[in-house]
Length: 196
Image (tube, rainbow, N blue to C red; front, side, top):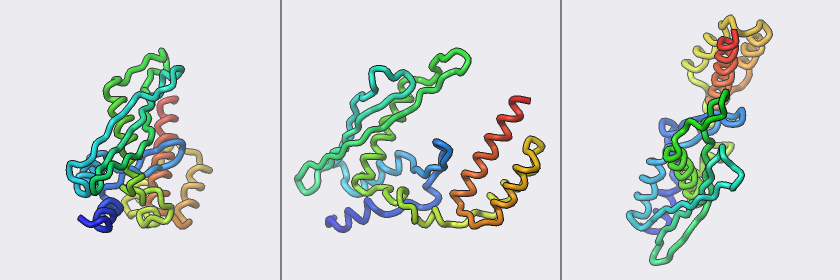
């Protein structure tokens, strides 16, 4: 494989069916699953890459695990390494503060996060950080719009919130915008139902 072919393989955008979204800090963030990154690295480098992690959790941190990942790739006989940090918030019971998530699962999540971040330094999934990426400007689907309209009918919402939701639908929205709006509305409705 030539350098140009390898670079094209690494930088090839993932399809919209492979891109997922999660809510973080009030935003909807795009991501891909770790096996897709592994497959992409295998396609570009075969078996000539490795990944290691070291614990980098601050001594005073009990609720977040941090790992330092190193992605090492042999390209034409030359070893190239890229390092990034990955993290995972521990899950706790609010009432007792007891950590309920499994340590092994949390470490695996932090390592996966570090691998994906290292891979972006080789251009894998780098397009997810491009604010002009096609999936970010794609209009919302009819299914999303219908689902959002049904959420607006909830008795848990005030008339003002329903009107604001209807106004938002009149503006120019992307599929990503709609995903964030749906998640936010679901959180509000669920919270109010739990407290009533």
